[in-house]
Length: 453
Figure (cartoon, helix red, strand yellow):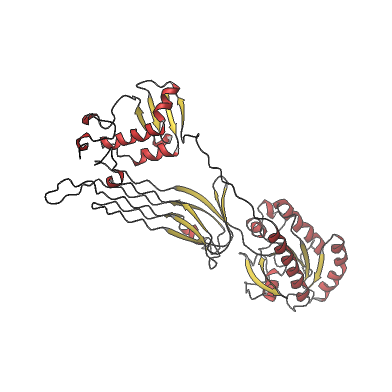
């Protein structure tokens, strides 16, 4: 079984590291057994970051290893010592990588060396009891748990960043052409589908330097999955201009430059999104006498369709200077237009709850509370600790959850569900109970033993 060396689409499963738990600790020393809370915070979990690396040209590493996870944060310790932050994982990706959800929603278009995207954020570390101390709660006997990191699956899709895309049938001479006009050295052979990966070459024409992409050959039906074209048509979507490379020396029956051009344009049209790209046509292999005669015969017909035509030979290099200068002029014009256009303004509208940061709706006799803060607070709570539960109740009350439930008609004993359905916490609604502090006969989350300290 062949091992792929070029991969331009992968599904990557990423998870940020878990935040470390805070710690509940009390400072102790001789003659001062209760010196106050000194529990440190947990460290934050490490992120998973995608970063554009110019030296990376394929996504093959993520084809072999598709799961990546950030490091976990360390737990807090006594004496105000915070836990260590988890190590972030930086994943190098090629220039031109598009990141999207499995549903097709684009998250980022990574173009330019060093461009980064935090694709999975690490969880925040839990606060220790020193950070939770206040005038009303002078010596908390609890700490917050660390949060789990983001976990998601994303699709990475590479679209080669090049100025000019070479389009043509297999063995039309695209690889030979890119060899002749640049220092790229793709594999070349005299049979179809020699090119299995896009090749990039850098061309200097006059004062313009630009990149040319040699895209694997198209065949009729490529946009529907035939041959290799379906897999690689995406690589010409970023090109400022397209060059049709037509084989004037083909010996295949039923083929000629005009019919080849019709097929290529039909496949580009079926793929879509390339209608505005300027086109040039190169009639290749005129070093063969019969091919030169054919090129001279079909050139007027192609020009009548609105194309600029160049008769060339990649083998003898005839006509290449005029062709490279023409491509450079198109690239220069495209760059000038791009600079004049204002950069798009990206507006992010995250799906929020209401103005209070949460929503409540009644489902099957229970009350479902949704919102970032209530869900996060529940995950931070150690439900084996009564004080921690009391602190959670205090936070929900200050946010206005209890008041809203009363307004909506919640009754004592009703179920209150907080969190996602697959990992929710269910409470019994009773706004009068002294949750978490009833054994101490004080307010929720308050320790009356320390009121006079």
